[in-house]
Amino acid sequence: VPDESMRIKLYHKLANLRSRDDLKSFPDALLGRELKSSPSDQLLNNLLTLLELKLLAENARLTSVSCHIENNLGHFEIVFMKQTTAESLAQLLTSDDSWKFSTDVLRADHLIDNSSWIEWLRTSLELLGK
Image (cartoon, rainbow, N blue to C red; front, side):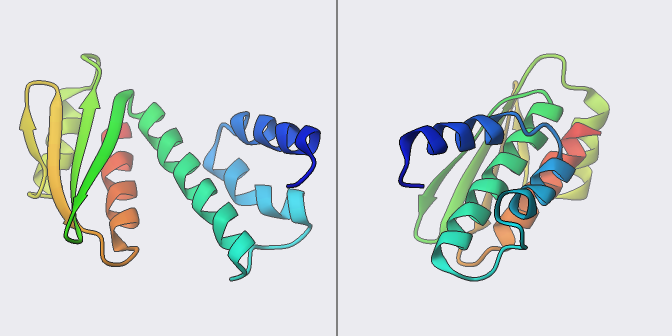
């Protein structure tokens, strides 16, 4: 968005999206259409995916979600608040044995050579948010 005031308004609207349904309807509200495969649409889709993961992390009351990449292997780390329930931790740890738990941190490695890691992380955050 070349105009600075329009860009700030757009960022403000994005910052106020509070649900996954809001995220899904945002492209149509903004563009009047669904996203396509153009480079600019892909950038918006990536931003909306990032915001969705952020909302899921907030719902799970996480402090941070990070990833360090080495040779197509993502080293993921989830830091959670003390209020995270033992039940939600147990649910994730029993459903996906790639996650390892220590103190208030979960760590896992996952290949990032395609977009499957996004769905894997989304599912993990959803389980923690239950």
